[in-house]
Length: 277
Length: 266
Image 1 (cartoon, one colour):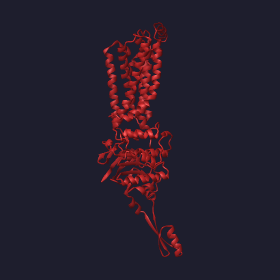
Image 2 (image 1 turned 60 degrees about the horizontal axis):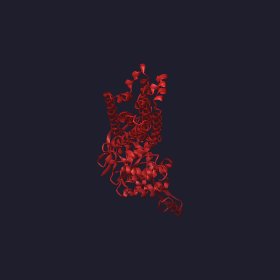
Image 3 (image 1 turned 90 degrees about the vertical axis):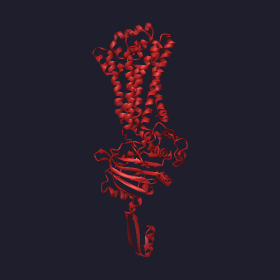
Image 4 (image 1 turned 135 degrees about the vertical axis):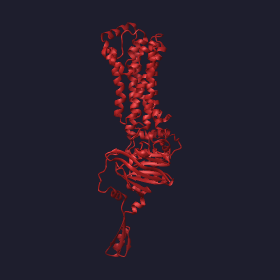
């Protein structure tokens, strides 16, 4: 059962920018990784899901509701981390979280404290004075605080250090276990590989691949068989490269990382970055 | 329809400006009213006679007989027009366009709050600020007049005058708000939100000078607020004020509808 559904979404900004007939869906309880370089149309697609933009053609549906015309009903169940978070700089972190709680009318029975602890965030300082990582953590807390069952996360780990990134990945894994539906855009292959069941790759506004993470990985597996001088060398080799030894022969398997898979879809063109629209 | 948390935040955001403008208005009103003195009047009249164009451009005319007439000449041409207008411009722009420009509108839009409710809350915050400023001015005027010149001020007339003033500023606020809702870029929001009222005020100053320039009065909405006519009790002035009030309602409604339907690149 698909919770998030995008059907032939089009928004043309001219000059080949925008999104063109993008379609994919995210099932209940599934984590979907949305990969693409900057300016590929990830954020534009997400803005349509959030009801910020009205589709030129095609439509976005979340839980059977139209993302544009019924956006406030959709929003009630959504948690969102914007790609570039812009807070009310005049507030402290704590004031901001209090404001969001009151604004959304979620009451005090929320996950605020648990999340602050998890990400070791001390929200007492002015947002203006916070580092990028702290702001990102604040954005995460604000998005998860009301315990939404659908999560739309636009590059959620940007600015986080590796420790916090891995805590975030743990959080996503837990949420998934609780049956939450997650759409996560990223260019961090590692986090997508570790957390997402299916992955969609977008390039220049068009979906180039949508497949399960396992299928994508399998498709790009290579095996090599190496013959070595003697058995003891072969054994050491097998141990070092986690290969399978058969006499002096060792078979090693390499998985192309998602990054390499990713680059395959982009062909030689590495310079198709342009500012996100 | 209204979001209390957002309203509280915006009122907090208005407080500084309200205090500053309130202080300036208090200072001017108390000084001007204390200047009311039949003897002193002659001095001011002589100024007005000596440089009629300059004095007239800011609404100051000779022969202001009563205390209220005196106040109309020296307060309702400049001080009580400019400061609430500045408030409308600054807050009007900050209420929608600034959030959209900076991207923090995403925080407000990504919540189960209707866009119409967001815009309506911002209108309420702007209107509250304008009402507070005009109401405060009225209180200061009554207080200064009562303590300085007991029995000299016709309270009913003052209320009518300030009721009209309120409608004028609601209309100006409407222009600022609409412009804030239309443009994503504060640059343009300010250009129109501030540009139109200021340009209209300059036309009004020109028209006040008289002569050929008086024709300018047909091109500025400030003409619709005529303090002398309101005091004189003409039916025409009531119609003008009603036009301002209805215009204000239309501008705010239009702003809310546009914000509700537009694309937000946030």
